[in-house]
Length: 70
Image 1: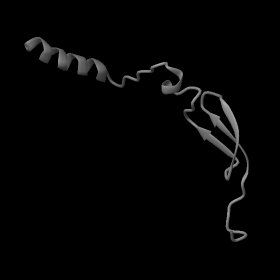
Image 2 (image 1 turned 30 degrees about the vertical axis):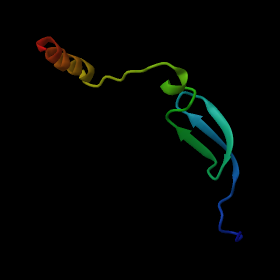
Image 3 (image 1 turned 90 degrees about the vertical axis):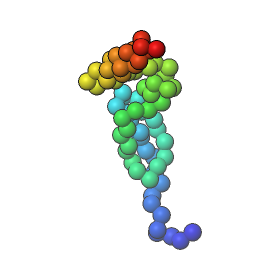
Image 4 (image 1 turned 135 degrees about the vertical axis):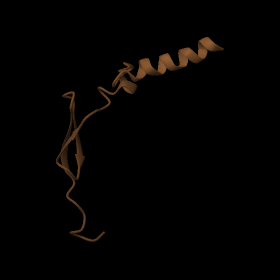
């Protein structure tokens, strides 16, 4: 390998928005992420539904009409 062309590999900390932190090694010193395995619904088993402007209710009303007419 050529010398002087590779980034420095150093101790790093990954910090999530939920407050969980992971110590690892990376070319970046500190990383901030919005979601991690500690708070992600797939890993925790907790489903979070973010309903923006009543889209779920709109979907349910639309398909309830179709179901009733059949």
